[in-house]
Length: 210
Picture (cartoon, rainbow, N blue to C red):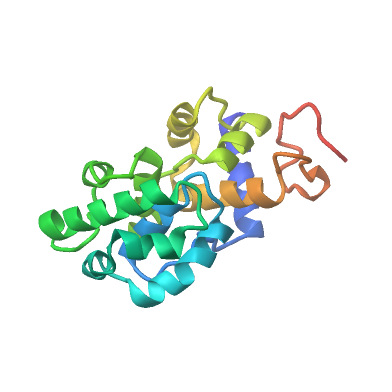
């Protein structure tokens, strides 16, 4: 896809959804971090069901430590890998209190040093909580980027590198959410709804479904 088409691609997604937002529910940067850690290999819907009650009680690292690992497991047991995730959330809460004064750091290296936080999780937190123009790549973005020809890559890191290089600066703050929403509701893994796609004429996918 050439630069002009890339710009048109995002302009159309922006026109369709001017103010895209994460579908994870959260109340502050700490609860966002917890929600993103829980969302690994899980759906936003499933995470939200588990965290609504949790975030009524726990909104700070100190409150999370007071709840404890066993207590946390009781809230998140419906989520895949909940034992490991609960252990990581308690551990990262301890680190936030000990090393960051209880605040979520606005720094990729510091975020990635937290248990259960990798490149994608850190990028999501930086984008959503702090407004950094990061483009974390999940399964939806990976699929859309490859299927449409926007940013082909063999793995998520490769696609992220391409997107960082080709997405115009004015679109970067929301590019992550536009691509996720497009992949979740239009360019689906099974049966893309090409007739509803606002970028279908720019897309290079050879098997469009009309």
